[in-house]
Length: 186
Image (cartoon, rainbow, N blue to C red):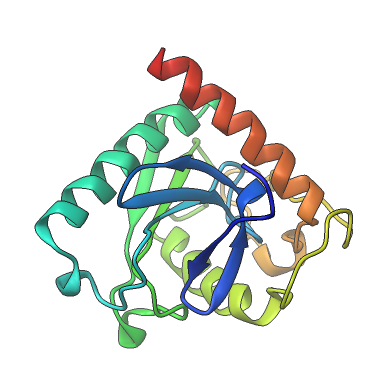
C-alpha cells in the first residue's frame, strides 16, 4: 500500500503506507502515538461517527478484522492478552468522529493498575487530533515510539514517554504487520 491512496479517519487522511490490513468494509492502521507497543486501530472504511450507525455487515466485518489483527499483534509483540476498546461518542472520550476499535497487546505490568489503560487511551485520542500533521510527507518528522520499560507498581507518565512517531516509523511498522497478516492468511 502506498501513499498515493489515503483512507479517511474522520477528517484525517491516513496514508496508504500506514494501513496494514484491508477488507471490503474495514481497514487496520498503525497508531501515531501508541499507548503500548503494537497499539493499532481498526476502522470501517465508510466514515461513520457512532457504532449504532454501522450496518450489520460493517459491524461483523469490523470485529472480524479486529479479531485477526488482535491475534497477530498479540503474538508479534509477545503479549499475553488484548484490550479491545471503542469510545462511542464524545462523552465516552471519542475525539475523532469515526468509529474505531483500539487493539492493544497487553503484557504483565504494562500498567500498574490495569484499568489505567483506559485513561491512557483517552489521552492518546485527544493527542492524536492535536499531533496529526495535515499531510505527512515521507521521511518527515522524528522519533520512534517504543515500550515504556515500566516496572510493576511504578506510576507511569505516559505522556512523557510517548512521542509522535515519524511517517517512516509508522510505514515500517505497517509493512511488518502487513507481512505478518498475509503470512497468517496463507
